[in-house]
Image (cartoon, rainbow over all chains, first blue to last red):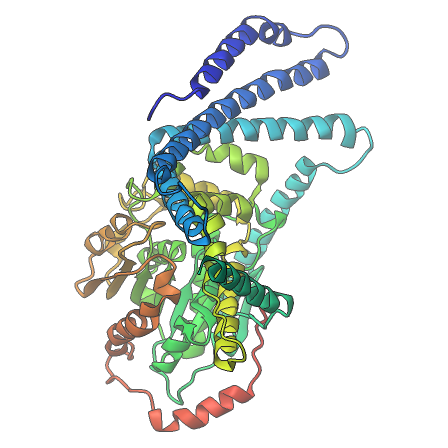
Length: 182
Length: 388
């Protein structure tokens, strides 16, 4: 794939991330002190969770932009001469066909690459961390203080319910077997 | 000429929009049926036979947890189920329903040794037979393979339709992407994995065609012959068929988290099933236990379950009576494409018929003379299964 201008954006962002990790990143990772240290500790972790997500998002976005640029370049190559002169509905249709085919094929190649799979895996993983963190914060700082049920508590009930249902099913089946034996 | 084309395109769009503004009935799953058993959200549906004396051995269709079973009964002229009924079979289908929070801890074992086993037992009880035919579709095919290996004494024939068994392939994008997913984080966060999350993955396999070109193509297929009733009917059918597919594609149930976790990790990431190392509730699944007749059906251009993922099943089992069929169609086309009704269903029926009689008796062919009367009776019954 040809070098695109997004690579410099990527380089700039990598540099920013290095600086963040060496400065603010270290500051927010510092152990908290005092009576609220437990809460502060958890809250500060949010910064690094977000920084990870942001970094993965920038990486993915930059790669996607490069593929878009590549697809656009290919479309331009294919249509440069044909699209000269008067614009007609047929030309628009032809352009659409070339556009959709070129974009589909270019993206298919990209989606097949191990690079995309690992990028998406990383982005998804950081997104889950971030969402989980947000939920924990919401439960900790809002729902619990408002004395409202949390997702964690509902999950505990669901687990208990699942286990009880399973036991009931097993016992019912055993009773049925015993009845049949009689 | 150019101006005329532009007007023609606008007319197509206008005609299409007119149909959308007065939407026709595009309901799905219309083949008459009844619910004969229910456990939690799982329903066992029995289709009313269209022949007086169906082949003795009933068929249980096990569909995937992703999307809904009614792709097999999308509309009367594109219905695998109707075709099988007309071929004289007694057909049952498992409807998994829509899992919710309370189902998040359901495991693969609960699906295979719980729901499927109970459905099989119910059908055995009704038909008074020891063994029935299992027809597994896609992920439901993988479940059926697991079931047949664990309970071979209850399965007379095993038919797998586009079912993955060897997940270590890079031919399909889903297989490729799944290896990089942190499944634990997804399940730990969601609990019940949203259907939309999975759908996003399916759409990403060909984003431009699936999210843009498909809709552009719809209006392109609209015909504009003024005052032509046949043309209006054709247009309405085009829209109806499109809407049915659209409904099915985006009718994506959420996934029980623990089942999703085990399926993704043990199958897609570790590929344990084909290695005979996958365990359900501590019990190892040995594919060599599959000794009943096997028909392994796949689609040549399947982009979701590549042939490399399905083919190894035929070699992995110990059945002496086994066959592999590959049709030149795609993953969805095998159910609703033109080849489905003309080639796929007839071939499956042809294979099943001689194997659908009770051991020790001769094959009984459906009583076609009585078929008409029976069909009339059937029409008078109302379907008890509603798909909203």
